[in-house]
Amino acid sequence: MKKGRVTTFDLREKKRKGEKSTMLTAYDYSQAKIVDEAGVDMILVGDSLGMVVLGYENTLAVTLEEMIHHGKAVVRGSQRAMVVMDLPFMTYQVNRDDALRNAGRVIQETGAQAVKVEGGVEIIDAVKGMVEAGIPVMGHLGLTPQSVGQLGGYKVQGKDKEAAKKMFEDAKALEEAGAFAIVLECVPWQLAEFITDKLSIPIIGIGAGRVCDGQVLVFHDVMGLFDEFRPKFVKQYRNLREEMIMGIKDYVSEVKKGDFPGKEHIFNLGETLEELLE
Ligand code: KIV
Image (cartoon, rainbow, N blue to C red):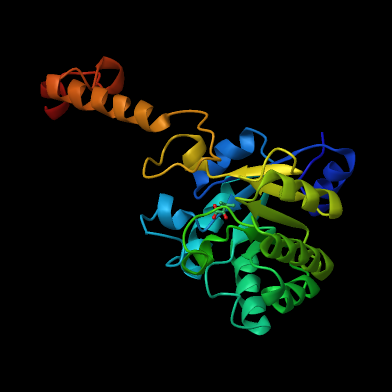
């Protein structure tokens, strides 16, 4: 088996061979260990951590410092997966220099392998700057949560001719600028299939059908840990929230009844207290 982390080259090879790539978010050390051990190719330290970990209303409030804090833990917890870090809102949109400086900090301070940015032609200068500096960049098109205000909510994107053409142009621009992959979020599968076929870099879908080169989902959605909303494209593979509540209720009840701690959880002197204190 290949040693070391998954690389951008490995992902492109998978696309060439028609093999699917997998990506899942993680935000801390223990989650990263689980996701890595389960064999996922890429771990995304998504700015979705704003909602599922920090309790913000959306991703806009997430700071570079928060991303770096969580990214470091994920890198420490993983060995095989490529770690991709979301660049948060307003850390790459202002200009190329700003983007380069912030992406450089993220890579240098976390040890992650790549960054992800939302947008197409309007951020292409920043993407080129990062790629020229040697930073692997993943694009993100379709429903881009950092633009939720402008998009008017979390809606399917690319449904009319103009929007579909713009998305394709954006995808081509990202590929030409050197992006190694693109996430397509909440896009009709026919458009996702077209873009997947036309581009040579891997297209990773989330709510974009099974035709993409790979899939990404949010850990808390897949494991049933976040109950505030569940988008149509999410498949919940486990309900850990329920499991956890049941486990915690058992703990509370055993403590109240005096059943916990049991004999196996306590420490024994080996002599009587009187002997010890003599
Ligand atoms: O922040 C995130 O988790 C993401 C995924 C939804 C792709 O960007």
